[in-house]
Image (cartoon, rainbow, N blue to C red):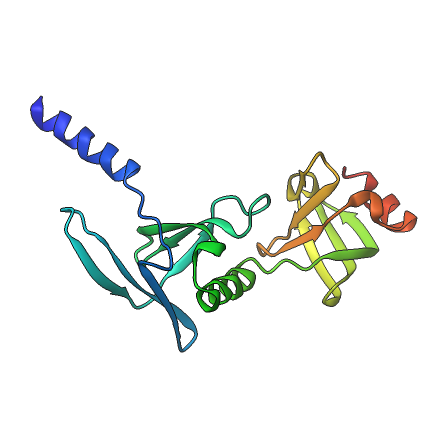
Length: 185
């Protein structure tokens, strides 16, 4: 029974023990196309050590509401190294490197207008004008591929390949574009 309690206690300690990454304890560098992190923090035994992670991955905890706050930093094995509470706690050059990496990972063109939208056999075929130019994509089960945020006026679209698109304000679309998407709202 004591063994089970110790395992539970260890698991709870791991959940609660968040290492916050700041300019005082971290240095980010770009090597080739990857970000590396050198972090000085307590290890599992509580001893402060400096460790370099040759490749890190970033994950937004609140991608829609706080895109540059509460960023989880993961190692190559997908284990959390620590959390960045806000980019403002980092040196400017580190914050820019993190922001660049997040913008690459969470690339989301903004839809300005809908040129055409056709629905056939559970798939919808979109041709849109975005801030990146004209794009085409396909959705499966359109109703579930549209996510309303901010009271329903902001829409995120996820296509069959996992790419994301954003309509910042559905009510700001031109009338023809709105009529094309209205059925799916």
